Picture 1 (cartoon, rainbow, N blue to C red):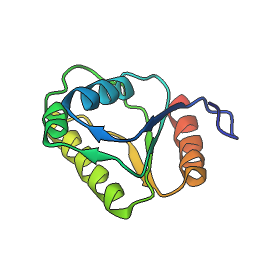
Picture 2: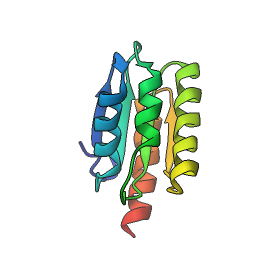
Picture 3: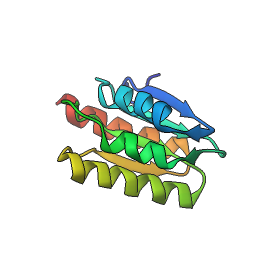
Length: 119
């Protein structure tokens, strides 16, 4: 998909249980993307203890692309922010990210960040 400012974005939709396998697959895909990422979390997302294990086990060199996470639940936004911050610190790989309750502001942020990394 493309933002109104012309930035091409990888859109990922997620719902349901994030277990170790699903988390590893989704996060590895996001971190290896060359495009900014818009991740939209459904209302029924649950994160298992295995998901946290998968995040700790991520290895390799990842591109530093911006990731905008959209979740309607304030609790989910807070939890995702803490997980991303923990992964960033543990892996010494800062993830440029922001959380939003709606897609519009997330796309506007990706517009700015996408142009910034392209410069």
